[in-house]
Amino acid sequence: MIRQLRSEFDDGKGALWAARRRLRDYAKIGRVLLLQRIVIYSAAIFLAGAYYDWRVALVFYALTLAGEIYDGATFRKILVTQQWNDTTVRVLKRDIYVGTVISASVISLFCISVAVQQGPETGHFMPLFMLFSAAVFAAINNHHFLPVLALRLSIYVATILYIPIRDLWIVRPPLSSELWLHFFTVLFVLGFIVECSRSFLVGYTAMLRNRRALEEEHERTKAAYNAKTQFLSTVSHELRTPLTSIKGSLEIVSSGVLGAPPEKMAKPLDIATRNARRLADLVNDLLLLQKAEAGKIDYFFETADVGALVQEVLERFRPYADNKNISVFTNTETADHWARFDKVRLDQVITNLLSNAAKFSDDGGEVRVKISRHDGSIRISVEDDGIGIADNTRHKIFEEFSQVDSSNARKFEGTGLGLNISKRIVEAHGGKIDFLSKLGVGSTFFVDLPEEDAPTQDDRVAA
Image (tube, rainbow, N blue to C red; front, side):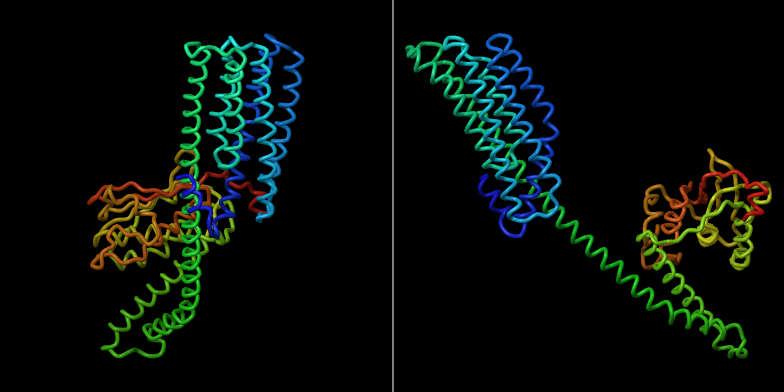
């Protein structure tokens, strides 16, 4: 099963990627566990020195540190490698094999030396326990390469078998002796170690194959997203120039500058003009969305009075509101409210909130615009008495191309881009945009911007 999993994943163009991923995972885990291994080995060797022979213990401690230094250098070489090819992989694997032989042999020889000093009648709990622990530790943490794991385990297994077999050879006890029981117990535990190793290796190989599939899917998704972005950008730019000409020409004809149009043409001209404006707005929104996604929107921040900007927007908005028979009320004259913002972009946000409030309000409705202070921020609120928003559609409000009613027969027109773009703009200001709503009662959208101190007279003169 292990061979099948490896062949499925490592064959073909994914082989180099798999080898690089395995090497880097091996090095990362090795680095993380470096200090842990040194502490464990130090404690074991200290106990061996305290109970048996300090000279032997110190020799193995020096050998153990040398092996860890070699492994640390190998881990670093793997993690700093930038150019990957088959030769690089072979060299790094060779270094891992060498380090595996050194570290596994030092541990095994240390355990054999302790067993020899203990004598054949002791059961060798300490050296056998250390070898079992090292084998399980390798199965859990060194499962990235089957040959490396097999090499390390073969050294441990050979040592584990050697210690009880040596005792049996020296003592030559009858089958009823506990020495034979120790030997059979060792065989039982070895079976557990082999199964544990197989389980971890199979699980890691399957995980690595799934990770590769996810990364490939991510690359395909990213390519499709980039293609979509490029397509929308190109189409939007290509549409913008002729649409601007068409819209301008229709507005000139509708205005009567070229003479009053025939009465029969008034309604078709009005329809054409309104739809040309809608198309122009859609193209502009698409272009702005592409800029926002690419992080290319230019912002020119300055500290200014939010109320003054809201007043300017309201002056332009009132004719539209009057045309829809919507009353607009505001408290922006009450006090100065200073924040740092881009006037053009914040103007766009406020205009969008006002347009939505009017669009979703009934004939004769009201829109209330308020400016207040809220938790260290300047809050701009736009409240309406319109249709409101259901709780189960809340997640759609700020999504791209999203509308609460997305059916073909929806009552309210729009691209579903306005609030998404507004959210991006507000977040670029370090602020927040959100809303409160109750279905059938109305909605209140608000923008919070970090409050700034009013500029001094010297600042205003300098500006």
